[in-house]
Image (cartoon, rainbow, N blue to C red; front, side):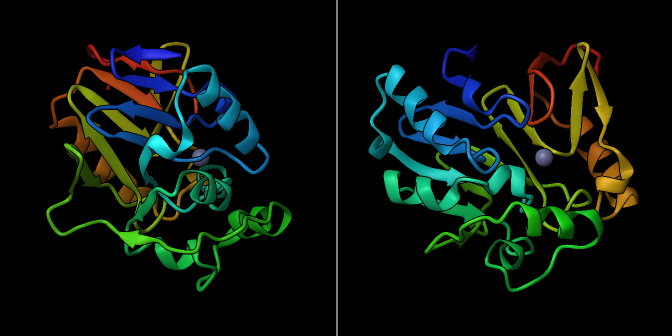
Length: 205
Ligand SMILES: [Zn+2]
């Protein structure tokens, strides 16, 4: 689904959207939940995109429904994988998730990527700004490309409105609220969440 001229929500990941940014280089934001990888590859094919044209995969956070196909996509694309230094230990399996997320990660096993890089100091990759927004997970980030915000799980949308994530899914809801205020001060026109549909921001933040 086209959001703007160079941003697409991947229909194969509906429910926990991954997004494609088609700039000078092609960048994938998140990878959907386990089992959606083949659908992603099919969708790329239907868009006439060779998987190897994807140069970077940017992860918003460590949750299973965002890193679900990271090993497969690493292999198929050869892309460089990025995540925050706080969330990388969970992705590598060096740290255990807490509460319900621990249970989910046991039920939905995710293959680990071979290589994963932590976001650069200057917080920029391919003209995409990395905005640290801790709370949902310790190292959750939002991304801004042109006038599009990729919100990850900082918020969700439903019926055309922005709403908070359920607090039991958050690592630290107070921190998450602070991050939501921080993002409110940034300028962007489009809100692309993982859960819910992309919407125009207008006054809905
Ligand atoms: Zn999620």
